[in-house]
Image (cartoon, rainbow, N blue to C red):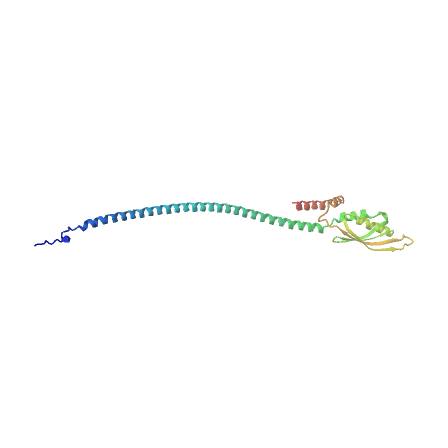
Length: 233
């Protein structure tokens, strides 16, 4: 009996590989396209963000730079003004120093000058009556030496006290006093010697200034007034 051989493998129609390959490849190509599109979108977004940040910081830095430049300009102006003021003050300081030097020189000159006519007139006025007389006067600087005579010791003492009461005198000292015996032609008397210190006139008080003017020292009084005006300024 004949038995036919059946080869199922041989009889099965072959499945085209191209169909399977195309079916699998198509989804892979779409996924790659989407990945590239996503990457490009992210790149654009990142670039936009970076550009925005760059522009923001650039604008911020620009504003800060302009602010700093304006502040520098203001400070430069203030510094220029301060330097000009400093120069002016230095000039004024030099002028003031010059004035002070001139004033000190003027004061020294006044202190070295004594109104001798006024001093002699003051001494004459202080003599207590006819019982006291002066035989010699010598001066050195602000010191005046007086020699003379008197009828008695109390009159010499009165003369000393009246000199001490004068605004022209700062001190007066009795250096010597001795009795002189009388003769048939003269009465007994006393000889004396005084050392008187005269005040300087570099800084006189108003009362002393008036007395100088009353004694005729008009030119000296005017110099004193000029000195006061200079010192007052």
